[in-house]
Length: 493
Ligand code: SF4
Image (cartoon, rainbow, N blue to C red; front, side, top):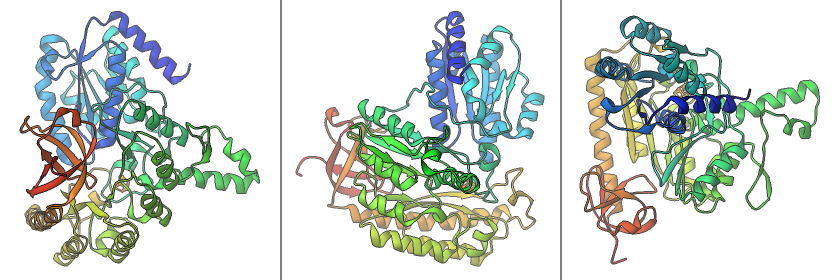
């Protein structure tokens, strides 16, 4: 039986026994993790459950975990302590999925210390969640559904989106890079890209539903289709088969039939950007996370030529020191990173950057850290996501002996934070009196008399306006700047 047919079979079985049940999904990770949570919610709603934010009222609670940072573990175990009483009082089904479940020591800890958990499942078996849930409901048994090999990409999963204006679309899964601090390649497996036609169709469908902004997601988005192309190249070399035969191979097909019937070839990330850019209704395209080593000229040209691709590029730095970058296995030097930034700036007018930085990686000296500050000073990022290095069991860096003292890590983190805030504060001034295109996302969470939206560069802008503006891209004159938001004016333009 096909995977989605089997999934539907179990969804129907659950529907027969589920009487107005409620569910809660708690997401503890990145945007890919959030996208997975939307699929878990999709399967639950199709099974007849409705969403609740009140954990006491939930019949099923699903934790969707992440294992990139240590504090996610603390959060999970803390929250499990809280939901234990709901299990005891109401018989709530407790399920835990996501990347953390691929880590054996975590699953062992759950079995020993949290035996009330009903289901554990990994990212490679998420599509079987209805089967796991049905068996937990009917047979009252504990389910451990984890696969140690790379799961296939499953198309056609139900999905309940958390937003009606912005949507994320996963384009690939896994990673081949093995940065020495990162657990992702071990838990998500090797890179697998979705067929371009499936991505095109998903974005087209979102556009027809009124979505305005799409974020293309992947652990390493700009190596989209690279593994597939390489595999086909080596197949071609060994079997001496023709391109046409290769294109027809079932697992990947580079041909995309557009809505107007035009047939195009999409065999790279750059071409994917160009194809999505032609979809009517979509006004903004973002993507995370690219890797600097794969930021090829065709990607830069595609961003330049595609009017809907935002001019904020997230370019993870991680460290500004060439020797730390080597030890991180990042495959670029400080100089290469800076010359890439210069090349992008020269080609794309008004481009801005955001980044990720890890402070206190094993062996980081004061001089290495100053290299990081130097890059931050030179690039003048719009946004910096800063992390204190945390050891992850199973990674190469965890075994490095030259770990940095916590006190030094925190002191460096605070210095970087201070510099980042100075740069952001100074950068905000450039918006004053300028007219920015803002996608209006809804009411401000802190003041419901104001609307809120974002510039192309992802700056939050609050302003007074009519609810009819929600979901539209409008020009706003920026009248004042504050550390984490700008204030805009809609009239007078
Ligand atoms: S590129 Fe590096 S940091 Fe990103 S997911 Fe892959 S291994 Fe982890």
